[in-house]
Image (tube, rainbow over all chains, first blue to last red; front, side, top):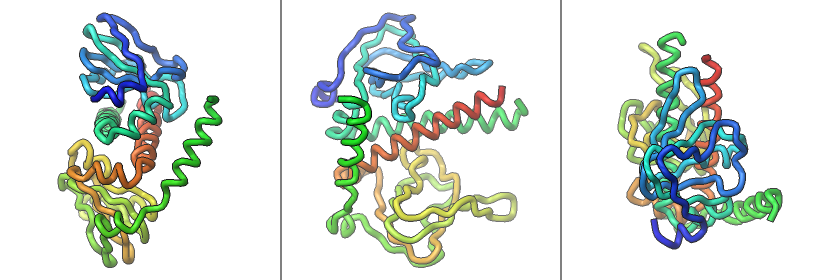
Length: 128
Length: 142
């Protein structure tokens, strides 16, 4: 990630245990995150927790912003983390100048969707 | 700028990008005759198809038969899931009549992006909506 893309966002540092957002929160303002360093866990509010781990160079928080809905998951910092966050306009600007950012973001979403699809199929098979 | 104004500007900007120029067609365009297999179930995805004209059948093997799941056409992307995350192809895609498509590989993603940033934004929005729906479906199991 270069300064060119990051200039449209703001940096923040989060300590372990920081809840960046929780399910049901509005996804407005600077709601799209990029993880530079550290580890973040996304928790789906299911009866049994389904954690998805977000590693450096990944984008999260985008789904609700693009789907125009409240937060579907919680986001929790497991480690001391350095993050960037954009509002939608900043993200659109950053991703329009960086094909790497667009590629990484699409790849992250397809991987996330793949986990959800597989989990759904698995739970159907198990008759949950 | 309000969300409404911003969305309106984005919409206009996207419309301006709609035209795919001749250079892109020459570089990445392919024409497939009727009943060509574009994607085979079980393979690893190396290419993504952007349909410019015609239609394709999306089929999946169920036991000893192939079931047609859907028919998609102009403007649709085919094969994006396995293309990006390297999962195996989940369906077989067969042309229904002649089909014109842009065909991209991982190596020339930069060219796709240059051809139309709109394409990537549409894909991001489409994936986000699918994730939202799948989370709702998972929630409905409980």
